[in-house]
Length: 173
Image 1 (cartoon, helix red, strand yellow):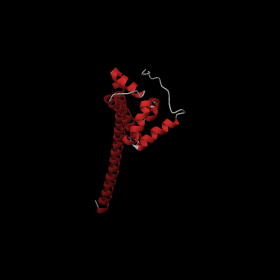
Image 2 (tube, one colour; image 1 turned 90 degrees about the horizontal axis):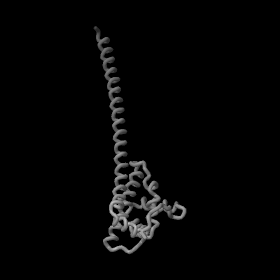
Image 3 (cartoon, rainbow, N blue to C red; image 1 turned 60 degrees about the horizontal axis):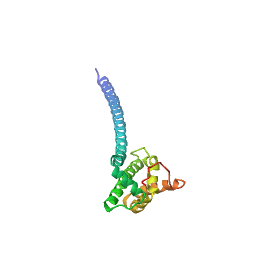
Image 4 (cartoon, rainbow, N blue to C red; image 1 turned 60 degrees about the vertical axis):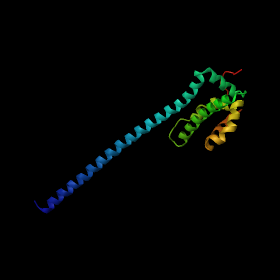
Protein backbone atom coordinates (compact mmCIF):
# COMPACT_ATOMS: atom_id res chain seq x y z
CA UNK A 1 0.00 0.00 0.00
CA UNK A 2 1.33 3.40 -0.87
CA UNK A 3 1.01 6.69 0.95
CA UNK A 4 -1.61 8.00 -1.48
CA UNK A 5 -3.91 5.09 -0.70
CA UNK A 6 -3.39 5.54 3.04
CA UNK A 7 -4.08 9.28 2.66
CA UNK A 8 -7.28 8.58 0.72
CA UNK A 9 -8.47 6.11 3.37
CA UNK A 10 -7.67 8.69 6.06
CA UNK A 11 -9.62 11.36 4.19
CA UNK A 12 -12.55 8.98 3.79
CA UNK A 13 -12.54 8.02 7.48
CA UNK A 14 -12.22 11.69 8.47
CA UNK A 15 -15.12 12.68 6.19
CA UNK A 16 -17.22 9.82 7.57
CA UNK A 17 -16.43 11.02 11.10
CA UNK A 18 -17.60 14.53 10.20
CA UNK A 19 -20.83 13.20 8.68
CA UNK A 20 -21.50 10.99 11.72
CA UNK A 21 -20.79 13.93 14.05
CA UNK A 22 -23.26 16.10 12.13
CA UNK A 23 -25.91 13.37 12.28
CA UNK A 24 -25.33 13.02 16.03
CA UNK A 25 -25.54 16.79 16.55
CA UNK A 26 -28.76 16.98 14.50
CA UNK A 27 -30.22 14.17 16.61
CA UNK A 28 -29.25 15.96 19.83
CA UNK A 29 -30.71 19.27 18.62
CA UNK A 30 -33.97 17.56 17.69
CA UNK A 31 -34.11 15.79 21.05
CA UNK A 32 -33.40 19.05 22.90
CA UNK A 33 -36.08 20.86 20.88
CA UNK A 34 -38.63 18.22 21.85
CA UNK A 35 -37.64 18.54 25.50
CA UNK A 36 -37.94 22.34 25.34
CA UNK A 37 -41.41 22.01 23.75
CA UNK A 38 -42.47 19.55 26.42
CA UNK A 39 -41.13 21.78 29.20
CA UNK A 40 -42.95 24.78 27.70
CA UNK A 41 -46.24 22.87 27.61
CA UNK A 42 -45.75 21.73 31.20
CA UNK A 43 -44.95 25.27 32.31
CA UNK A 44 -48.00 26.66 30.53
CA UNK A 45 -50.20 23.97 32.10
CA UNK A 46 -48.74 24.77 35.50
CA UNK A 47 -49.39 28.50 35.08
CA UNK A 48 -52.92 27.82 33.84
CA UNK A 49 -53.51 25.67 36.91
CA UNK A 50 -52.02 28.28 39.25
CA UNK A 51 -54.22 30.94 37.65
CA UNK A 52 -57.31 28.86 38.26
CA UNK A 53 -56.22 28.08 41.80
CA UNK A 54 -55.88 31.78 42.61
CA UNK A 55 -59.44 32.44 41.50
CA UNK A 56 -60.75 29.24 43.08
CA UNK A 57 -59.22 30.19 46.42
CA UNK A 58 -60.88 33.61 46.25
CA UNK A 59 -64.27 32.13 45.35
CA UNK A 60 -63.96 29.46 48.02
CA UNK A 61 -63.66 32.17 50.66
CA UNK A 62 -67.02 33.56 49.57
CA UNK A 63 -68.89 30.29 49.17
CA UNK A 64 -67.55 28.54 52.26
CA UNK A 65 -68.40 31.24 54.79
CA UNK A 66 -71.72 33.06 54.79
CA UNK A 67 -70.29 35.84 56.98
CA UNK A 68 -67.57 36.53 54.38
CA UNK A 69 -70.14 36.50 51.57
CA UNK A 70 -72.33 38.90 53.54
CA UNK A 71 -69.33 41.14 54.24
CA UNK A 72 -68.48 41.15 50.51
CA UNK A 73 -72.02 42.08 49.51
CA UNK A 74 -72.21 44.84 52.12
CA UNK A 75 -68.81 46.14 51.02
CA UNK A 76 -69.84 46.18 47.37
CA UNK A 77 -73.01 48.06 48.27
CA UNK A 78 -70.92 50.69 50.03
CA UNK A 79 -72.56 50.05 53.40
CA UNK A 80 -70.81 50.98 56.62
CA UNK A 81 -68.29 48.38 57.74
CA UNK A 82 -66.42 48.13 61.01
CA UNK A 83 -62.64 48.71 60.77
CA UNK A 84 -61.91 44.94 60.79
CA UNK A 85 -64.61 44.37 58.15
CA UNK A 86 -63.17 47.18 56.04
CA UNK A 87 -59.78 45.50 56.21
CA UNK A 88 -61.33 42.17 55.20
CA UNK A 89 -63.24 43.73 52.30
CA UNK A 90 -60.13 45.52 51.03
CA UNK A 91 -58.12 42.31 51.37
CA UNK A 92 -60.68 40.29 49.42
CA UNK A 93 -60.66 42.89 46.65
CA UNK A 94 -56.86 42.98 46.68
CA UNK A 95 -56.71 39.17 46.41
CA UNK A 96 -58.98 39.22 43.37
CA UNK A 97 -57.13 42.00 41.56
CA UNK A 98 -53.67 40.71 42.47
CA UNK A 99 -54.61 37.44 40.77
CA UNK A 100 -55.91 39.36 37.74
CA UNK A 101 -52.74 41.47 37.61
CA UNK A 102 -50.51 38.40 37.84
CA UNK A 103 -52.33 36.79 34.91
CA UNK A 104 -52.23 40.08 32.98
CA UNK A 105 -48.46 40.30 33.46
CA UNK A 106 -47.89 36.67 32.44
CA UNK A 107 -49.89 37.24 29.26
CA UNK A 108 -48.03 40.47 28.54
CA UNK A 109 -44.63 38.79 28.68
CA UNK A 110 -45.86 35.91 26.55
CA UNK A 111 -45.74 33.31 29.31
CA UNK A 112 -49.50 32.80 29.38
CA UNK A 113 -51.88 32.81 26.43
CA UNK A 114 -55.16 33.13 28.33
CA UNK A 115 -56.65 36.62 28.52
CA UNK A 116 -58.06 36.28 32.03
CA UNK A 117 -58.75 40.01 32.29
CA UNK A 118 -61.16 39.91 29.35
CA UNK A 119 -62.63 36.52 30.23
CA UNK A 120 -63.55 37.59 33.75
CA UNK A 121 -64.56 41.11 32.72
CA UNK A 122 -68.27 40.82 33.65
CA UNK A 123 -67.39 39.97 37.26
CA UNK A 124 -64.80 42.63 37.92
CA UNK A 125 -66.64 45.34 35.97
CA UNK A 126 -69.67 44.58 38.11
CA UNK A 127 -67.48 44.93 41.21
CA UNK A 128 -65.80 48.16 40.07
CA UNK A 129 -69.17 49.64 39.09
CA UNK A 130 -70.54 49.12 42.59
CA UNK A 131 -70.24 51.90 45.19
CA UNK A 132 -67.80 49.95 47.37
CA UNK A 133 -65.80 48.53 44.47
CA UNK A 134 -65.48 51.89 42.77
CA UNK A 135 -64.30 53.54 45.99
CA UNK A 136 -61.79 50.73 46.56
CA UNK A 137 -60.43 51.00 43.00
CA UNK A 138 -60.08 54.80 43.24
CA UNK A 139 -58.16 54.44 46.51
CA UNK A 140 -55.98 51.43 45.63
CA UNK A 141 -55.46 51.14 41.87
CA UNK A 142 -52.62 53.57 41.18
CA UNK A 143 -50.75 52.86 44.38
CA UNK A 144 -51.06 49.07 44.40
CA UNK A 145 -50.86 47.89 40.79
CA UNK A 146 -48.66 48.29 37.72
CA UNK A 147 -49.68 51.30 35.60
CA UNK A 148 -50.09 49.02 32.55
CA UNK A 149 -52.58 46.86 34.44
CA UNK A 150 -54.55 49.86 35.73
CA UNK A 151 -54.67 51.34 32.23
CA UNK A 152 -55.88 48.02 30.76
CA UNK A 153 -58.60 47.67 33.39
CA UNK A 154 -59.77 51.23 32.89
CA UNK A 155 -59.71 50.86 29.08
CA UNK A 156 -61.89 47.74 29.34
CA UNK A 157 -64.30 49.59 31.63
CA UNK A 158 -64.60 52.49 29.17
CA UNK A 159 -65.04 50.04 26.31
CA UNK A 160 -68.27 48.83 27.90
CA UNK A 161 -71.26 50.80 26.63
CA UNK A 162 -72.52 52.05 29.96
CA UNK A 163 -69.45 51.23 32.06
CA UNK A 164 -71.18 48.19 33.51
CA UNK A 165 -71.89 44.71 32.28
CA UNK A 166 -74.71 43.19 34.24
CA UNK A 167 -74.35 39.78 35.76
CA UNK A 168 -76.73 38.30 38.20
CA UNK A 169 -75.46 38.73 41.74
CA UNK A 170 -77.70 38.50 44.75
CA UNK A 171 -78.61 41.74 46.38
CA UNK A 172 -77.24 42.38 49.85
CA UNK A 173 -80.51 43.94 50.93
